[in-house]
Image (cartoon, rainbow, N blue to C red; front, top):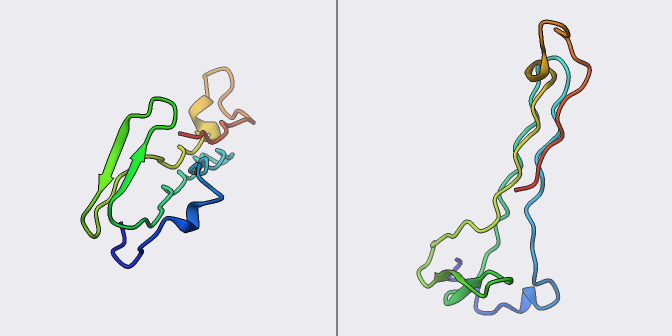
Length: 99
């Protein structure tokens, strides 16, 4: 929450937000990078609800108060995670995932 903001007018035309997905895993034992959490600045008194259940997730009333409602996605696992005795150097990896 940002005490300097006074209105939700910035969100008038975009009401639904989604955090980005993690990066894909790669070869050479490299796992994909986790995605950053999505951070939105809102004015005091903002109520965050689940659009499907209408459940109140957060009621932000104090300056600096935060609520995590959309975590960034998990990065994919690299090729070493899929190594087996039969295939010690696989040529595939896992894609990053949304959360």
